[in-house]
Length: 351
Image (cartoon, rainbow, N blue to C red):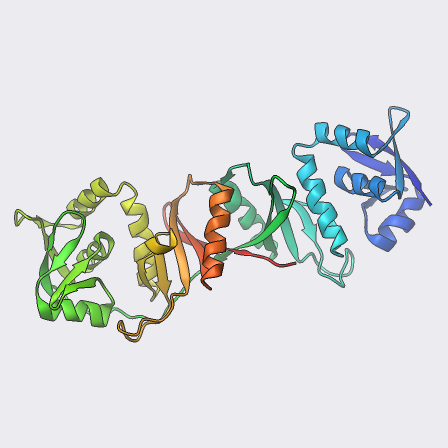
C-alpha cells in the first residue's frame, strides 16, 4: 500500500494509516496528532522505495522533483540522503538528531532502546572547524552517546570515523635530579657534552639521541621541558644563560608553532607518556605508553598532532593521517591547545 502525504515546510505530513504502517513497524517519522511527520531525508527514501506519494501545492511530485525541492530547503540535502540511505540499507533505524542523525543499535529501535551513536554528515570538500567538532562532541558526550563523522567523497562513497575524547596515560615517572648539567643551544637543537649526564638523560629519561659516544643531542621541545623542570641549565653559543621564557622565544623564532607543540608535549610527559618526534609519520609526535629500554625500543602506541583552538581540518589531510596511523597499528590523536590541553582520538569505524 502506497501512503499519501503533503510537503509542509521542511517536513512531510502523512495520513493516519502511516503511523501503523511506517512508524510502528519500521520506525520512520514521528507521530504528530493523527498524522505521521517525516523528515525530508526520510521522505525521499520512502518515495524511492515506493512506500509514499507526496503532494506539493496540490500536485503530486515524483522522486526527482522532490529531491530538487528538498535540496532547496536543506543545505547539503544530498549528503544527508546518501548517508541516511546507506544506514537504512545496513539495517539501522535512524532518526533526526542534534548532529544530523541519531542511530539505534542493531536489534534496537525507538521506544525500546536508546540511540547508540549520533552522526555528523559532511563532504570531503567542506573544511571542518575544530570548534564545530568540539561542539558536537560535547553535545553527544553530555547525552552519553558516541559521535560518528560521516564523510561523503566526490564519488558518493562514505567513510565513517568515530571521534571521542581521550586522556592518554602511561607508566613513565620522571626520576632525574636537578641541575644535572649545562647544555648548549646551537642552531635548532641542544647539545649535552657531559658523558655521564648524556647517558642518564637517555637511559633514565628517554630524552634525546646520541650524536656519538658520550654526547647527546636534544630536540628543542625536550630541552625546553628539561629546562622548565630544572633538570638542565641551557646557554647559547655566547655563554648567555637562557631561562624558560628566553629559550621558548628563541625556539619560537625557529618554529612558529613551537609553544603549541610544547604544551602538548608537556601534557603527555606529565601523564607518564614518552613522546618522540613523529616526523617519519607526518605528525608531531609518536608516543609510547611504556619504555623499558631505549636499545630495545617497542612500537609506539599513538601518533599525536598538536593543533590550536582555531584549527580548520582539511578532510583529505585528516583521512591521510588516520589511514597512516591505522596502517602502522597506532591510534591517531589530536592535542588541542587553548587555556588547557585536551585530546581526542579519530579512528575509522566499521559499521
